[in-house]
Length: 118
Length: 111
Image (tube, rainbow over all chains, first blue to last red; front, side, top):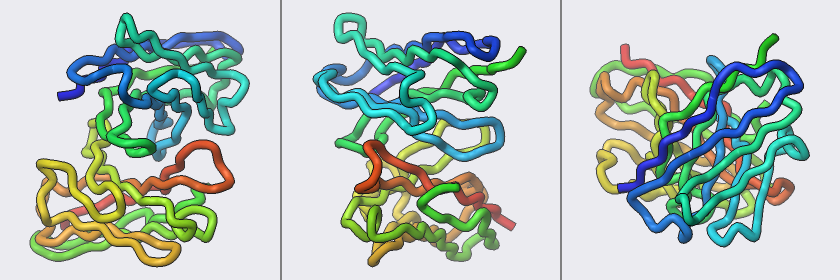
């Protein structure tokens, strides 16, 4: 059974940086694409980024392109999201999710809260 | 504003059947991209409910069913139960985007 556990959330000032981590277990880590999806308080889901199983392809949502970087470490079975130039509108719970097959989010973590505020 | 349009809310009495629509266009659902549905119970992470338009992952009750026609898709819940009270999101891809997108979400209330 796939398990995903996010960490690294917290309070950061506008313009600051933060790196989120997602520890994976229970599946073959290097066989699946991994995503970040966020949810602002009281709002719907917003897809943030995807990294392919072989790390060769990375895709980003328009609102984070150029500011966020997705990466993965196979030896540590961990997914990362480096977030720079943070804005108040980036405040959200950030979930990591695993592909069931391409572009289907078959398993989700519980999320980590990022608050961007002065 | 989501490209995939869902009603903000639907409601029904226990045992009734409710449907949630997800309306797209010829660049996404109408272009042949699959639609997936997720259920988010209060205070919980989303969970895959329907994939590939019509298929249920193991463990999802057969009260939940999906369909797709033209530029729209639908999720039906038959025999509505109190535990079905949740937010439901459709998801697909778009030929004009490099990633995926979600509908705005629908809150299901059991009366």
